[in-house]
Image (tube, rainbow, N blue to C red; front, side):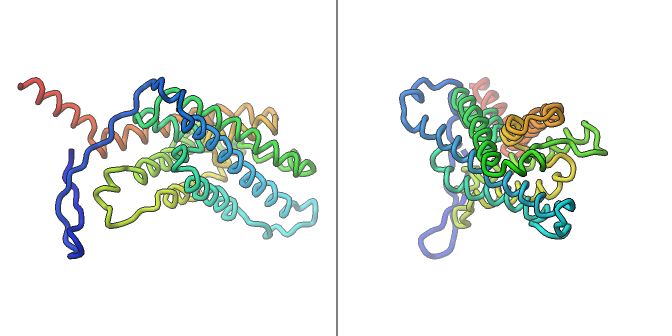
Length: 288
């Protein structure tokens, strides 16, 4: 329990109020399987990831076709890397805003993994979310290929690959740090204690999450094309199905999962001092 502040009437003054951390999610909750809200959330994750890949991969392919020198295109045309970053960040903002009240708006196995480690979701929910996200990503990329068949394979299918001149270690590091930024932002933006403490300062959680995705893409598009989302990388690799995309695929799973785990540990055990609270509770029990 912590003491936070709440407004007193209309005076503008604030006084302490009690805050209780919500209980951790059970590892396995059998009741979830008989609730429609559980399956509705899985469907929401599938559709959101499908839409995410459809819009963003179309943006990537459209940019490459607009700047293709073989077509006599203007090399300074198209949306550019900045526009691609905006497409990814903007779609995350929109989709998290739309689905947060239904599924939590994960749209990313790394986010789901981090929240599972922090005991925010149960194991069955986490696993089924990841399956839905990967299937949604495959279907989203499949739609892109269906609509842009002439350009899809020519311009790489939006698949994540390590750029020439970078080592696999560099690519892995970029994915770890990029995913850390994203998942750390997710934890901070959705922290119920912050909502209680700063209730007089409304925070629209999808906005900082979308900006985190935008900023990470600006930094890492030249290195890996920016994964930070295993479903995004997997869906594009399945539909594009080229050797280079599969050779580098492990980077876009190992890196995000490590980054998510570090972010979960940092937020829960350093910033929120969960370890210190647990130790203090143990000492209090021992002295009774």
